[in-house]
Image (cartoon, rainbow, N blue to C red; front, side, top):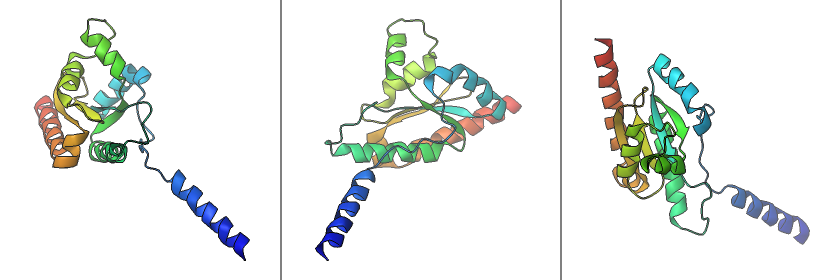
Length: 165
């Protein structure tokens, strides 16, 4: 009788450990290396770009990690209706800000430098990657909810409307 109970407890402990929070990227997430091809798709579909910068490895011992992962998932949910999600490469943007010619748009450099300092760092650009629609970081996402994302969506709609006229 003790063996089945112990086995059940071990199974439950294993399932709880595997249920740790994780970022739920959409299936059509754009990898940094395929950004140029995605630019054509975004312009054809009338979508913008949401660059999301997160660490490659999370420090599981940090209490803020779960909040950062939740903020990342919230950002993805709020932006996927009008943006292509891009896994940002922080080092490439930093290199571009220091003068390296690697094709990183100026609006992305500007947006990332003003986004904040807590993960995730989110920068929303138009489909041509020339206009900054919004920028935020994890702390603002937790404090203000999706206010920044609503404003970015509004700017995107206004930009689309002005292009049609």
